[in-house]
Image (cartoon, rainbow, N blue to C red; front, side):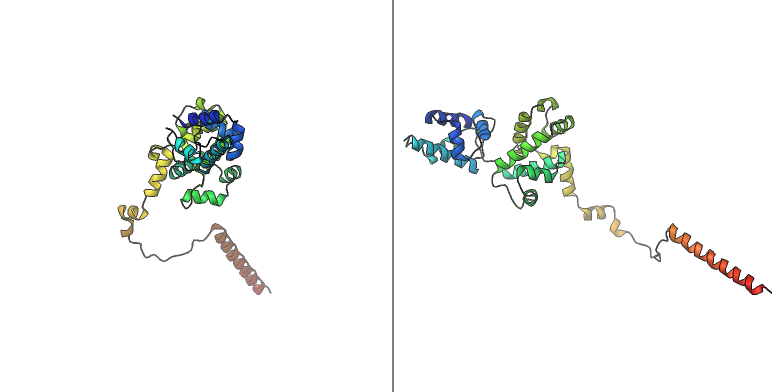
Length: 257
């Protein structure tokens, strides 16, 4: 059984409305709808998933279904075939590649996803991880799916995601593809931009200097002289010309009767 099937089974068993589950769990109606259709699965370690388990247990308690507890709901969901822990490290690797490939403006992105720019910077340098990877990825995917809606934008996305451009005409499809890609496991070295970044990280300037024997070159001891600009040379020439002219006038005056 898949996660969305188990979720719908609980809602049917409790004879409740999705709105009740949404309000008790704090999960938005749109996100819960994606959970129910199977287009999105929560992170098994996220607050959203734990709150969902607690909400179902509370609804069961209201209906006096004592065999449905938060622990039992959690256990049932963990047995579904598609629920798994999201890999935050993998997400951040893909997020960094997305920023580099699409040339995403950090300022506008941070304003949309409601994250401070310094926090995103820490995500990128590895000193911090999102507390809720699913929520962070969803915010990023929503922003990119909305903003990259031009012909050039969809072409760039298609190149990044490895799909045909015409498959990305709908924003909801772009969102789902981005969510899947952000958490996807792939060899980044197969991507041209990432391949360049990996090679740049591996480049050792000291080894290169030794390879070309630059450290063995002997620098000739030539007296150093500051270059003179053309303006300075013209000024110097003009000054000498004026001095010579004054000297000639002085000589003429002295020779006058």
